[in-house]
Image (tube, rainbow, N blue to C red; front, side):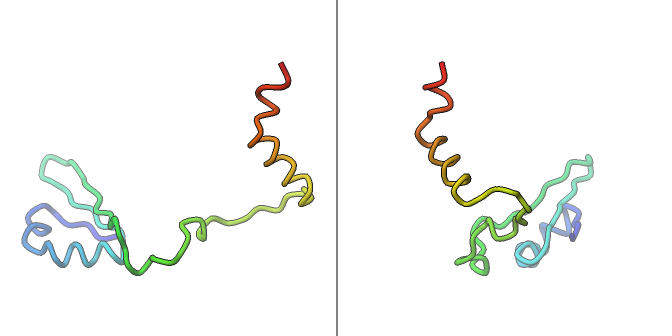
Length: 83
């Protein structure tokens, strides 16, 4: 993470944006307020799923049980037919 004060960020704005592509950037003002710069369209990340960074879990569930649960959720049986 890189922290810039407001004046430094304003004078080196291109550098701040380039840094934000690689790591978290925080800009602080004299009054103590802080801002985080987040890239909206990182060309380096294109082609990768945002879910790739989520780790899986071990679960004692069969494929059939999982598919059935998803199907029930999509069909709304649990919410509409059990009344």
